Image (cartoon, rainbow, N blue to C red; front, side, top):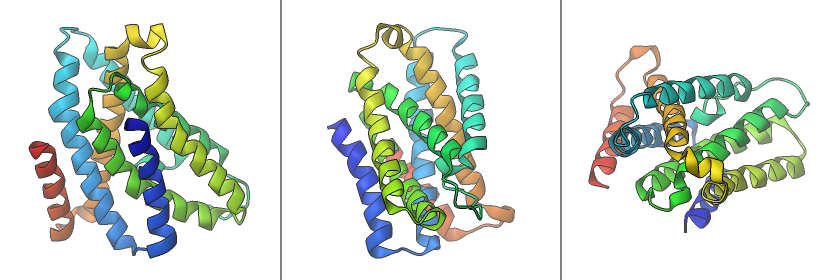
Length: 222
């Protein structure tokens, strides 16, 4: 179920762009909603589970995850939170490709125990608007649609790959709580950046604020 849902999230995001061609405002609202939902699930579900293990140093791994995501953002140009700066060049952005695949693999690791259903849907909901932004960027960036399609296929498979290997490699199983803490730190960074960017110039926007409230409310209900 996890693998199908994760792959479908990429397919849905790509089709929404290619078929409906939504306005930037709609994508931004979806991104804001997904960021609020991801942050809420991370704080309400993932953090309590991580700290319940009684490891007093676990906070270090959360900070480490935040720093790792910060470094990945440097290479991905902010693709994980839907903020990509286009560059006028025909060279394919391999640094963006690698950083996004690493992030996608990481976020699949906590799902390997098949018990984080709330987190699964948070990742699925988050991926859809991210893929919408990513597809738009790729179509702008390169005229080679085959390269763009190959990138999307690999990107779509990386999170399921993390889910599969997370409970098959002994080292990953042994340090699963520390890994979950690192991923939680990455989610914390991504979600807060999304919400920060949703209030550009610190202006109150009722539509974006409503999207945040809906995301938080859905997480509480779930």
